[in-house]
Image (cartoon, rainbow, N blue to C red):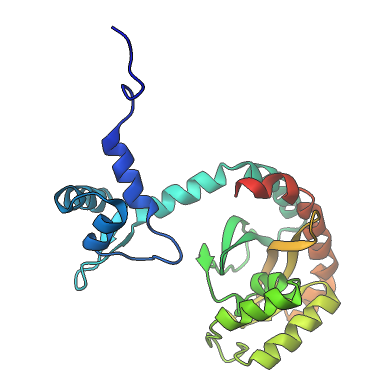
Length: 262
């Protein structure tokens, strides 16, 4: 008996993956009707797929609005896949080696549309740490975000500033566009960014951009994180500013090879 091309193709699995793939930055939540319309799957089958994915934890349903959004299982799955990517496998030993020598909390992030996506994090031992969310859009208040924004070409920076909501997270957060532009210019001059309790009270960080040498364009950034209970911004800059610039330059060398698959 000859095999047909579709003999080992699961249409059910294909439809389920189509449902999951609908969710992105521009579509963080959807109704069952919208899912049916976007996938072309009839309402009865859509109901079955959606409820199965909800029960498995890959989607979650708002009790009041009944709208669907990614669940914890799919977020964990995405993070695990990213951790296995070539980029992570290349960055990890470099960050780990630095961590072993200096015992500093290091975050490595790439830009994903208008959000910073933290792909790898190594926490300092025996020190207070503040865990940033894996993906966050308030990039004006973190050194990760400011390091990236500071290296954007003028026209791209202007466009980015139009879409960024300058949310005040702490009394130190910059919420004035003019002040933010001045801070980004100072960041370019220094070669690294600062966040002095702007994102979370008690957290001070330094950030440096990851640059794709092919086009001299920023694709992400790294940060060193410290607690105000143990360090001051002045002491952090004195001890670590030159180190974060150097590490960012070393990591940037792997970007041209690895960024295409991310």
